[in-house]
Image 1 (cartoon, rainbow, N blue to C red):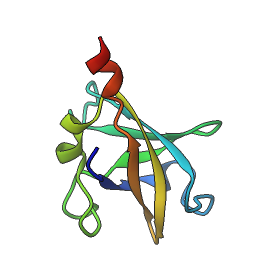
Image 2: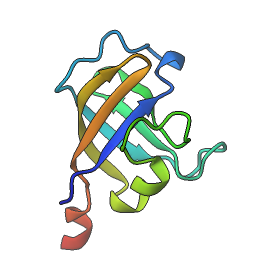
Image 3: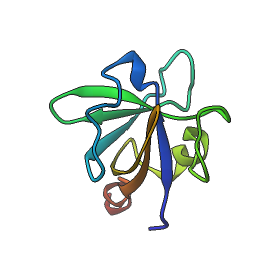
Image 4: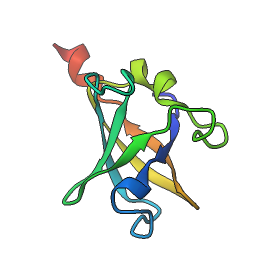
Length: 106
């Protein structure tokens, strides 16, 4: 699997970013019914739920990370990731399991 990085955005609408730590496990879920973005990918943490979304705008994507639109077809409906770097208004994260192996096995 190629290395895929993304930025979490929108954290201020949920719990903020103060609780995020490098190495934290994240869950990604596609949200095709999202009325604002058909390529929306929800970011969740076990026990807390929704903490934000994968950034999908030139204003919110940081560095060389992928936008939700670029990441969308490279992951399954659900995937896993980890926080790599903490940012002022989110976090840079790496996909650790793209969730496609189960689709290929079917």
